[in-house]
Amino acid sequence: MADSPRDPPIASVHVPEGEWVEIERVVLRAPARARNVPPDTALTDFVARVRGFLVAGADLGSNATVRTLLDREVGGRLVEVNPRNPANFGDPVPALLRLGLEARHSLDEGGGSTDARRSGGRPRR
Amino acid sequence: MMPDESYAAVMTRRTEIMRRSVGIDYERYELDGGIAFDTEALAESPPYSIEDVRQIQLRHKVGDTPLLELTRLTELVRRSAPAGKGARILVKDEAANPSGSFKARRASMCLAHAADQGFRGVIAATSGNYGAAVASQAAMYGLKALILQEVFDSAGRGQPEVLEKTRACEAYGAEVWQLTVGPELFYLHLLLLEETGYFNASLYTPYAMLGVETLGREIALECAERFGRHPAAIIATHSGGGNVTGTARGLRGAGATDTAVIGASVDLTGLHMASDRDFNRKSFTTGHTGFGFPFSVDPDRVDVPRNSARGLRYLDRYVTVTQGEVFFTTQLLADLEGMERGPAGNTSLAAALVVAREFDADELVVVQETEYTGAGKHPTAQLTLAREMGVEITVGRRNEDRPGERIVLPETVDEMDVTEVDLGRLRRSYLRRVAARAGRRPLADYEIEFLAADLNTTPDFVQVEWARSAGARQPAVPVSATGGAGG
Ligand SMILES: Cc1ncc(COP(=O)(O)O)c(C=O)c1O
Image 1 (tube, rainbow over the protein chains, first blue to last red):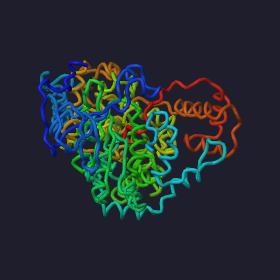
Image 2: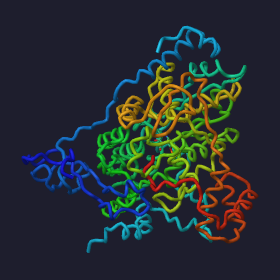
Image 3: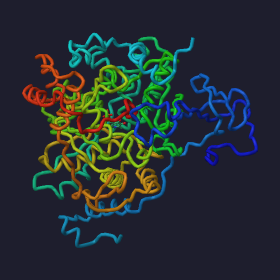
Image 4: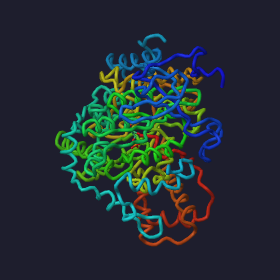
């Protein structure tokens, strides 16, 4: 797995104690997984990521221990410093904006039956 | 000596670990034969009256949420309904709970129980709103919360809604284990219960169900007072069955025995819930058929010995809607009612926009929840991921919708519809599973009675189907390999 984006950069990066970091650990290697998983899943490791404050300075990519928000210690490979929360709103979906607008028009302009609405007055796609 | 942490070894210790971590002696409720248990006695085992529950919840900022009438959506529906039809549509704004969903009710009684029993912390295996609810309630009790979530596929790509849940749980001070796809979440759950000695804040205990009863109760009481009638129907987004179960029990307990309980799920048929490939090809993390079907036909495959959430027992009707219809409904709610709300609640709202046409204009159809929305949960976030995963997004007819391949947004509200789920088929599938486990043997009267009640059907149906299914081959409805990643 040479080119995985989560592999550490070549030059080692030292992370000081106390930083908020993410560690990754393989909970079950692919061959040790449950027997009832689908074939595609069975080829992959079962992996966990946990965040916490780094207990002792360590290099990115090396084994490290974090102290979690529950004050528990958990060990794994150090993969990220101050990990971003990546959820966002994505790109706009113009079709949804148009459909909402059309519903509004049909209600507020007394659109009447579906046929009447089909024949007139709606914004262009 | 360290206990053996291999998958097989931990799974053999599961009964013991579950017993210690949930503080309920399930054995007491089992009836001879391994098929039936005393459902009512288990449901009534928590030492709290419904008024106690209400008081505990109010002290922890839960419940008494507003019941809002959606007049403009009702008007839109009436335009295409037959004359005199088009029930008034109301929605219970459960997003007003502290963690933003009805799951706060469910978590509140688990935390009350954990605190009463002297646990220092709780664990919940859930990728959904329940994790945030447990973390939020735990913060109020000063208890620790550890949450396990199924977040990533093997390429490290996170499902946006679950990523948002990680953030929320950490905001409430929880330790979160973010996991790749697979049912081994349950294995890790057991391992961490053993390691920490924390309480198992399972979604499926009688405590969790009791917490939801107040939701049905508030709806029944408020409708009687404000409108002088009970709802003709309430529609509940249906997944693991707790939403339906708690709400239905609360409605009935408050006297609304004439209200039809309708479950609604997003249609995700064809996608495998434990598949690494399919994981990010779905745009909903709960309230879908990938949980709704397997949990209905095999309710006890969860993280406690007996599941107190039993969908088929309480459902009068079960429908599905498409992903595109729910996204469209989410847009309508914002555009016509000025409310931005999250995905799961809008599943039952989508169904309501169709079902309301069947009822008279003076009747009430109640959508029993909203949930919060935000980054990752919003339709634009999900549709952006869908596009990246190669899912096509079009405007058109619902029969062109293909879960995992094409999401079809309806052009107008009158092009929306619901697909009826054949409850008879689900009941038969449930019975075939029981038969496969129990073997070909005659049923005792109390078992027939249990099964008829558990399936909301007649003893005759049970006997006929039992005779047919004993020894038959395994059922067609796929079973989720996961035991508790929903919620
Ligand atoms: C907001 C919301 N609505 C509905 C559901 C479905 O509830 P249940 O799994 O109890 O059927 C869930 C959880 O899965 C949820 O988080």
